[in-house]
Length: 184
Image (cartoon, rainbow, N blue to C red; front, side):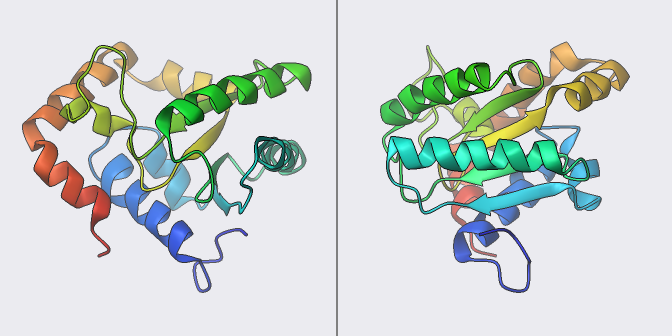
């Protein structure tokens, strides 16, 4: 299922709202607003619930990106699978292997987002984890060439993670949890 806005599922609506409020609204990714406003972000929900079905859904979305240059990026949302963060991380390794197998490593990149995202060396409720916490497990498929161009035009790419951590700590876990869960 893809986002048609008028008939978007609650999962896609939650994800779009998260992108608008958190990713763009808090400027966690300085490159996201342009693509969202240009309607070049594809939101896709899959009902896949097995590793094989998830890999097939990922393959289909990579093929869509190959066939559709007007789509800049895809958020493949996995509401029926990988609720456990460790299972998600294990699958992420398989997803990277699929990129390599298909000869698409270096063409596409997978960014990871999960409701229980936790960076190594952080506590489970550390605010900085919210830079990668999303309403649903998802894989963000990015075009590497486009990402490289955006990075080349940004004055301080290396400072983004530090600024994001500082911003998350300033906002605080309670407010971040509220932003992530709020329906409106």
